[in-house]
Image (cartoon, rainbow over all chains, first blue to last red):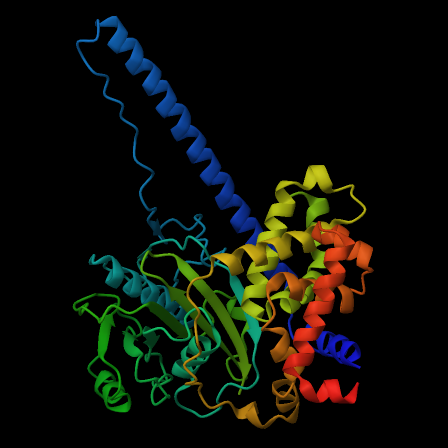
Length: 305
Length: 163
């Protein structure tokens, strides 16, 4: 019977979807807090405006209508700049964002922040200088939902995982699946080459963010040793951003106005370093941003290769 | 958030997410829908927390949100089809899901009609309960169910011949 088949189909598909309750609760907390802030700001602005209006009317009446009241309402608070120099601050992007301390894990996290920062500054048409190790600035995400999706079936080839994660996300997100995307990824890392060689759609543009690794014991960075190899390994990449402890070159080329920006990081960004076993687990962070700086997606792929 | 609301989310969000998924057919949309519905529930928690049908309230919110979004939607996004190679693509279970024409046909129904079918055949609600949850008459539920099934039959002619 049709109804029996319908019932069976509904029950079968209902099992396809799961979400971490902790993730959902964190997301709800974040949203609720933002909503409260919006309401507070709106209320303050409304009260200010009404008070100013009343004051203006009083002024106008008091001066026999010879002058007009200038009603000035302060503009909304500008976008907050969050710096890791303030370790007590919380970046909503990761709920609890640790500052880079010079460890490999922290560097990976810094690398991801750099990618996001690059992506955002690229959109904002503003030169943002990032500094690894001494703190970095990053625009806070305004609308982040951390989703954890366990996928055991991402390509297991040695190369291309990062791009594949981005491609997978783009292909599976109906809101952006047909968008022209700029993918920011990181080729760098002590072992290098984690993102090279992956499949990339023709209408997506890949920007590699090369995280310059500092030499141990010094604050000097050296990119000459590895960047040519990366460039050779990833000929489809449009550009390479050089960022590092001493930023000497941050080449922000005007792109082709992508619909969406996806930043991908391979590593332990956003998760406690101790939760990652580097030999067996790879964590993919896919972060997508729209042109108005709001983060529309943040996905962590936990995969075993 | 209040502790009792958190308890409710912990206890009921998995089931509500499944319903949201059946209403939308898309995992991402389902998460959005559930999240928005729970936020609204949180806002009205003090008013509804003692209600005997919190789930019904949450489901109704999801259905209304889903219908509103569907009406507002102007751009339909289409997958580019450029998926990366996935090592698990040969999984026979994947094939079964993809061949589920019933699921595909369900996606063509308007959200309200789809909601009626989900409430009737997944949540196993009576016509009266479905009507109460949707805020409509029993007659409307009957007609929506009938039309929904007719559309499915139309889309799946082989099922019709078997019935």
